Image 1 (cartoon, rainbow, N blue to C red):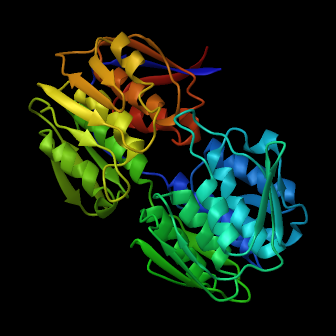
Image 2: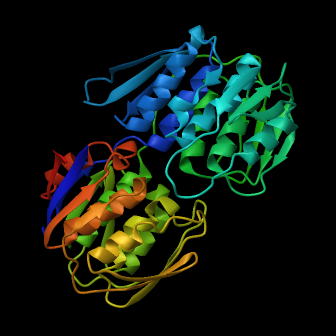
Length: 423
């Protein structure tokens, strides 16, 4: 099993390129099920979750291959769905990945049925799929649960008005995909507004779908008879970009993240600026510099365009070195403070009450052996290790490999002393 070994206390400096967004690639891969021809997703990062979904599509009968991408060093994934004959997602392929549920809507819309094992993923909360099933039922599908599997059937879906009881990114994406081949018009109300949802809508539109309203809380989808294959460029990963900018800020460095889209990161950039970091938009990216102390600021997570829950753990690590008190409130997932105990091992002063953490900044953290518990917690421990004098070992980095492509190489290119070794 691999671990990260970090010699902390080094200032990061330089330019690093952000990868394509995992949370945009996964729904695009699922959308391939809807197409009459091959789908090519350009700018796809090498990540465990993407590999897992590729194996799932191949299990169903699709052809999945990695191809070159114009000589710029990035990859593309090409999926030919014409061979899909087995609309089932077994437990052993979906148990580690929440996003596997995204094949549900496309399978029902294109093949009339689906049998999907209830999904797994990081242990940060229940994340039920009731909104997915409610929406598909309104579109005319019949759903049942049996032996840990969701079974859905529909001869053809019909348009309907679906009001989500809560913001749900995968729920919005699943229903949007299902509605593309439904008869009539579907209106998704209280829809998620994330950039990844907009990326999927753009790809579906290129495939021939009739969609409008993405980026707002109401999306309208008018069903069409068929969708075609397409090549689509994935958007940059705003969560990875935020993590890399925080790596620069927590070490008092000067880091430019090439490819980062500032408009997709407004909430994070605002909080970084409030903390005393200097944020500037540069051609093709975002730059962060920090020379003075870290000012403690309060953060509350909320659906986009609010502060993302996927950056909460990383920002808390940053606040551990603040000049006062900061309050971090988590409103999305009920179990996303698992990194707190590990940060305390490094000397952080954090008190947790329910969904609120009170962080009293300390002058310095110290290196320590740490245990990662989920994807973003892993990133927060890496950031803390970069800033902490001494040696930090981060175990269970397979969590991190689900969402960050070659993070140790990117940080090393900025001057970090970090290596991946066998435990």
